[in-house]
Structure formats: C-alpha cells, structure tokens
Image 1 (cartoon, helix red, strand yellow):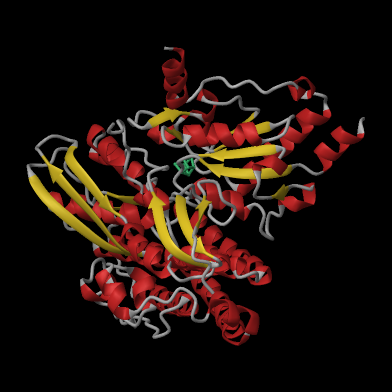
Image 2 (cartoon, chains in turn cyan, red; image 1 turned 60 degrees about the horizontal axis):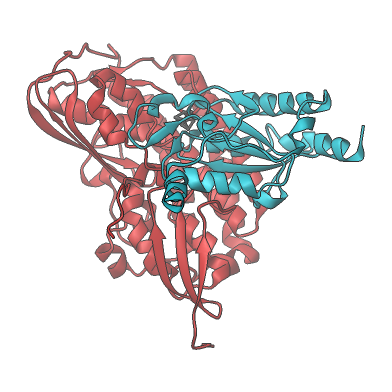
Length: 167
Length: 371
Ligand code: SF4
C-alpha cells in the first residue's frame, strides 16, 4: 500500500455542504462528530476548506441556485475526491423531487460514491456509510479516479454561458 | 481607526461557521464592518408551491421537512392551520401530547444552539457537553414518536401516538438530570471569563431597533422585550399552564445565550406540569377529506420565534394557497443591523446569535435577470 493511500484511508478529511436540505441531515451529520458517535475514532476530520478535503458530504436536494456553487466546490477539491450523498434528498431529491427549483439528487450534477438513504439517516448510518467508503478505498477502488473527475451535468447557467460564448 | 477605503469580504455560501449555504457580502474598513448585503435564496426549494400539489395529509410530512430542527413546530402550526380551516376541535389529551413534544423540541433546539454559540466563541468543551446531553433528548423523542428528527407525531385531528405512563416516568427522570446539568452549564457560562469577554457587548440590538426591525423569539426577548406567542396568544394548552416569559436586558450575544439557558429550565417545568395534568381520553378524531372554501392562520412559538402559517382551501382535498413565514426572516434584518460596527472576528458569533435557519426562510428565485 502506498503511503498516500494509507494516509487517505486512515485519515480522510471531510467537507460538508448543504445544497438545499432541511437541516435535519446537517444536524445529524454534526451529531456524528459529538461524543456519543465520535467519527474521529476513524480518523475522520471535519474541516472547512474544499482545497483540503478528500470527501465531500452533500446533504439536501440540489436546488437551481446552489448548483453552480456545488460544482465550484467540487472542482476546488484535489484529486482523488469522493462524494457521499447523505439523506434521501441527496440520494434522489426526496420529498422535494418535483419542486420547480430542484434538480433532484446529487448524482444529477456530480458523480456519487456512496448513498446514505434515510430522512434523516441516523448518525450511525452516516458513520456506516463513510466506513463503507473507506472499505471501498482500501480494496483499491477509486484508484482510477486520480484522473480529472468528470462532471456529469453542468449547471443550467454554465450551459447557457457556454452557449452564449459559442454564438 | 479608519483607513478611508473599504474592502469587500465575501462570506459563504460554503462557510465553516454556518451549516447552511447563505451568502453575505461585508464591506469592511480596517477591522470594522461598515455595510452588509445578504443574498438569500440558495436553499429555496419551492415548498409553498409543493403544498398546493399534494393532499392535506401528504402535506403534513412536507410541513415537517421545511426545517429539520423545528420540525415539530412546523407540523404543529400546519395542523393548527388546517384544523382552523375545517374547523375541528382536537381531544385534550392530543393537545397535551403536542405540547410536550413541542417543549422537548425546544430543549433540543436550545441546547443545540447554546452548544454552537460556545463553539463559535471557542469554548468547544461546553459544545461537546451540551451535544452529549442533547442525545438524551433525541433518544426520548425517538422513543415517543419513532424518529429522532422528523417525528411525524402530529396528524390532522390529533396525534398518532400516545405517551404511556412508563414513558412519562422516563421523561421525568430525564428532566431531573437535564435540569441540573443545564443549571451547571449556566453557572459556567456566567462565570467563565473567556466566554463573557467574547460575548458581552457583542452584537448589541437596542430594544427600539429590535421592535422596528421586527426581531422575534429569543433575539427579541434578549433585548428586554416580553413577547412570546405562548403567553400573548395561547395556543395548545399554554393558557392552562403557568410559566414565565424569560427576558434579559443585556441586548448582546451573552444575553441571548442566558435567555435560552433559562428558557430550557422553564420548558422543563412546563413538561413536568403537562405530564402531571395529562388528561385521559382519545388521542385523535377523524378529519374530513375535503375542506370547504375557507381561510385560516396559525401562530406558534417555534424555538427561534414566532412562526406563522396561512392556508386557503377551495373545496377540494388540496389547499389553494399555502404560506409560511419563518422566524429567521424576521430576525435577518436585525442581524444585518447589529453586524454594522462589529469586528470581523465577531461575525460568525453574531450571525449564529439569532439561531438562523435559512431552510425555513429561503423563498426567492430569480429566473430572469433584467438586462
Ligand atoms: S433527507 Fe429528510 S432530513 Fe434530510 S434534508 Fe431531506 S428532508 Fe431534510
């Protein structure tokens, strides 16, 4: 195992981003770092800058206005990067699926590695999901992701911008 | 000291100090904020429109998902509004169970906030202690309702689950422990110099400004104004239960913390009283499926302040119009005012001071920019 991989599995740094959720998932996510659950025992550290993060934890459905910001944060993260969709909203759009200003789940915008369903998922479930991701990594998955991460769908605005430039 | 020129500092939408995406543009002169421009709307999902597309029963679950911290406040307000439309009288036992859940939720929301405030002030030990205690409340709520966050205990015409006598004893036992812990933490907050230095005279909101800018909830009460929907316009069974409206004259972040700590003690007393006077009987009555044309407004004191829902029915099984006015909308203007003249380092603390919940509040989408 390379030192890089070893470090990645032993101490993944997490960044959390709410893309339009109701706060339920966010609070459960924060609860996971508090004494009862304590994700730090897996070496997981929550921190603020996307440039230092390995894993992006997304909560909530993707609203139209946040899409561009989510993409920007995703692009700022260094390779290899992994995305965890926390909650039903992030997985599929949940109760807000049909709302006029919601795109749907996270995978309509960026590729997702682990889905954690639940509305909201319990902190145990969140920890389980992240542990699954770490397992996946130790089995060698995600190695090919070292290349430039691909973006599934550009935000509406970016598409328009490109069109405008093309014309 | 003034430098004569100002610099623009963007804050958000992704920021470690806030769990939710919101953007503020600060203009700073040296270290002092001179202008604040908020940009809201990142969390706008179009919930009000979604209400019009689902039946009254489905909307109950949507109402809970407006906000994940005060989900019970939203669903209580929703059921109250819809029961006002019908109109429908709910059994007294259901009223008390709703009230007990509402106060348990206030305990969890306030302990969450005091923890966050301590964290923003750099006092992480207290943050961890409070969140440890908060888990006890979450366990209780899970036992009563079946879920930690979105309880779904309310239904139109009553509640879905009863509180058994064993659960009542459990709640009382928990309250004893929780109350003594909160008293201890309050003592720590009142004597801990690092916390006091960080919060006293920070984010001052004068009583007059608080009224003019429509502040609500603990933010308003920490400016010395006695205003609480539970006391001013009693809903549920608050008219029958003796309790005090907590106020503080400090007008700063420190006062907001102490108000919330004391409200927790008050809530504990309310729950105890309600459990002792829990009426016997049914817990729900069946509601009609369709509702004749009518209008109704519900008012609830959510943990963050006054929450208003409005509904209009048109004779079908779906509402014609639904409107939500969340407390953070009331507090946002006041927080922008208090931020002016603050140090850059105090921004997260002052912003967190109103206990913002942007997912309740965001309701703007600009689809076409004017050229
Ligand atoms: S999954 Fe549920 S709790 Fe989580 S953000 Fe969506 S509605 Fe809220």
